[in-house]
Image (cartoon, rainbow, N blue to C red; front, side, top):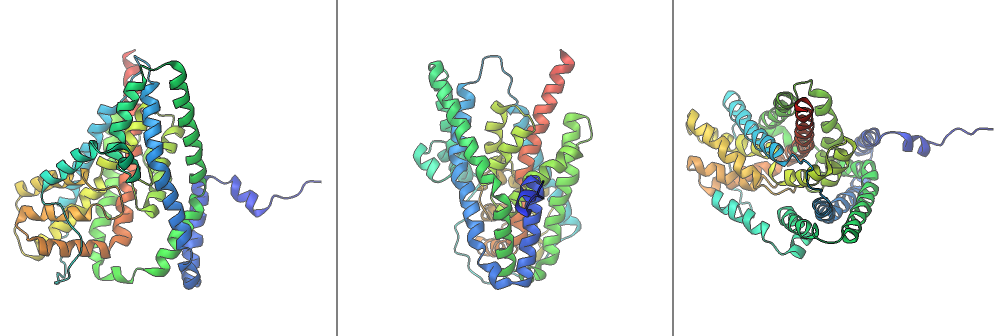
Amino acid sequence: MTTSPSLLQRLKRLSLVTQIVIGLIAGIALALFAPETAKSTAFIGKVFVSALKAVAPILVFVLVMASIANHKHGQETHIRPILFLYLLGTFAAAVVAVVASMIFPSSLVLSTQDVAVTAPGGIGEVLQSLLLSVVDNPVSALMNANFIGILAWAIGMGIAIRHAGDTTREVLGDLSNGVTLIVRLVIRFAPLGIFGLVASTLATSGFGALIGYAHLLAVLLGCMLFVALVMNPAIVFWKLRRNPYPLVLMCLRESGITAFFTRSSAANIPVNLELSKRLGLHEDTYSVSIPLGATINMAGAAITITVLSLAAVHTLGIAVDFPTAILLSVVAAICACGASGVAGGSLLLIPLACSLFGIPSEIAMQVVAVGFIIGVLQDSAETALNSSTDVLFTAAACLGEEEKAERLA
């Protein structure tokens, strides 16, 4: 006699993405019908995000070190084409934001509200900060999730251990597999974490505060959708010479959804590494490109910086010519590369872009305040675009280079 499977067993048989969608719908329903109960689910979401952030630094350190230490001479990696795609995508996103802001100019209500945050003083300060991150103490880098410093130490240790005995490198490989198993366990709880994040966010914040900034949000989200569904597919098509949308939609579905709700590129690194593995990409490549992308591949951040800066420019009645707009795109792309991989990391770089137009920091920081108000949607969409593009460009570069090698063979 066979018994029908229980509801829990049926849920376990569903794909992870389907489970996440169910958690998303359940979170929305709970926020609508039992808002007070929904607020108490914030703890579940915090635990999930904290778990992702906890495993990400040690995962990146061990995985990168093991990949380099066990890399065999003659094996091909594709870091250079990936870096090119990262930079091209970020600059293209800034250009899209400039064009959209000129066609659909936004106005802000700038008040005397003070924002107790400290913004960088110039591009030089951003670059100095990046350089100091590279030479950070390894323990400090791991504790503070400084992925640039983690990458630098992992690469250095990996190169050094390449000259060690086979047993040492095998142990390092086993350690990498062990950490990966822990990460997979954490990711399995994504549906529950998304449920808690959605329910608590909607119950606490709602979308009432966003109505006054509907036009600005429409420009921001429109730019991000255009880049995700038009610009990025065009870049992938140029690289692969075939229909890019199956790959684009897979990355948005399996990486973008979790990034949208965690609002942290750093927290989404384990998700992207797992997706890269399932796509069959080269481990020596994606183990470096994914954490690097979480730091420098910031198309969404470039859009945020550009749109909000040009909104301030339009509000103050400052004329912008085409050369200045292109310069803004370059500055926004460079600033975006220095944006922190945490929620709201791009907003503190807006004063750098505003300084191009002589806008004082007092007014620029009011624009930052507006960014925090609309951050419920803006930062979520920005992170989803940034993080999903890390996997997309890594896959496009790997597959493109492999097909190129096959043609030449």
